[in-house]
Length: 119
Image 1 (tube, rainbow, N blue to C red):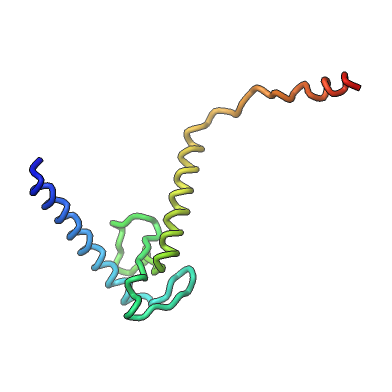
Image 2 (image 1 turned 30 degrees about the vertical axis):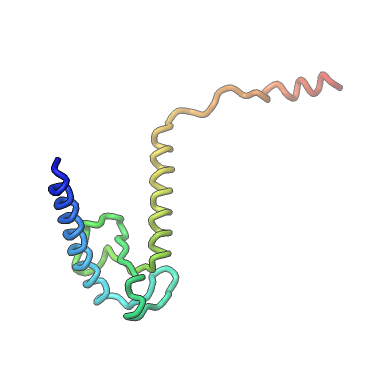
């Protein structure tokens, strides 16, 4: 693929993402007070870039105009929220993959008998 064409595709994708984010971000900033929903840190125009819009259901395409899928979080709380979500997804995927029972061999099953014989 032509490098210029690839650069154009990436540029368009980034621009579209920024437009999408600006629309729901702008709406969320009008709907909600500029306070982190987790740590209650307050924001002003000078540090507003550190306040993010979090999608509660983690679907970035689910943007109802009433804001019911959004909450404002500071960068740190937003990062923490996504880290916890990813950990939960990983644990759940590992659990669902291993529906087999645990190990059947117990190396200590006869330990009591062995210890009793030493007395």
